[in-house]
Length: 553
Image (cartoon, helix red, strand yellow):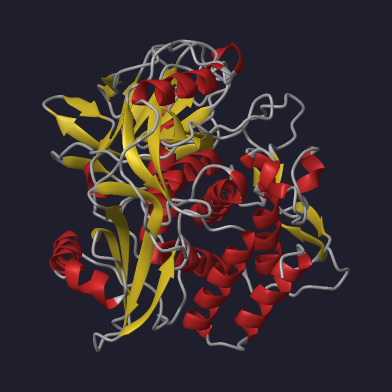
């Protein structure tokens, strides 16, 4: 689970996979801002290496074919006799190149950190393999030296240190841990309950099955922060569904997205929002647990995020399978956060301080749902440098969503969470042009960056993206003044947000893996720039320069 921000400077975030509901009759319109194709939403001329839109049936067929050939593929790329490949996703470029993402098993056990991507030309020739772990997957014995109960006990202790109210683990399973160094037999234990700020807990703890040593831990919950009168985006048009004589906040045109009311509860799906006249919300925050205004912002955020991914990258929903997640508002009592949870495949929003400051702004919605995209593509581990890249990816695409919307009430900027005022002084949560302005985030890479909370180590990638898109120095964009410095003092010329987004998306979906760190992210984005624009192109050189400017080289 991935929250929008960290409290007490500790790691919180969400990762997940689940199923959304079906469809009925859709009525209503998309917002005027999103009904058009905004400037910069997609390149004027399709790039040969850009992803092509796949129907659900075409994607399923590609996955089925890849799985049928998985044993042959495993042998062709040199995997051992005990290793098997399980297809997770397939991306097809306009030029016919396939990027097939696999999970791996070893003697029937899941290999965590064993994911890989096979790149295949239209001709069928393998062009290369990107692996999360370069080590050969081999362990001396599959017999653990410690009991599962001991691993569970350790996991519960780790969860309690984060404030979890649950006293028992949800079970330990045997796995192969290949996320760091030599692969070993291990246990993965998941502990539920709640964290100390009320965020649901889904702590994954990896324990060495021979020594009992804790090898790794990460949080599985990722937070962040009709016509409808929204709190943050003005009056917007919403796609709704008429059932009998009642309208439902149910968007069948975007995979079946529904918006539910938790009415201060912290579990369950909640009650689907309905209305008699199809005019939703008041445009003013209310402490009422039945208030529609927060639901308007959540539904609007979901539809703009869907349209952003569809029209910018050809991606149909978070899983790229045409199925929507769902949203829940009015979570808990005065809960000051929002989070994406893979286990329910849903977005959840708290109402903030006094239950009158819901965390439902556009960039928060885009941020949180982008955690779902990361989970279903690269699967970046939510810890260390990969965790920082995970958070930055959500900030980058959340910013992309805000610019894409073209909403005059919430214009695009490189500030994160500026509308929700969590700090109480009007300041944003994070700044992409100079991340250290928040008092905790890193402007540049150093050997200590991986030890920071992921919401602060993300600063390096956020700064890289800003420099790549806009360049260094002082400038004003949509009325906001920025002044972005560089580590080496050199000036950086930006290539524009449109190209920067295409490069980051391609890197995420075809070259990054669960263990990607900043050095590997540099390689991934250079590979993406080369594939999209050519090695040695202006765009390729700009990527190299922007990484150098944040001390990654």
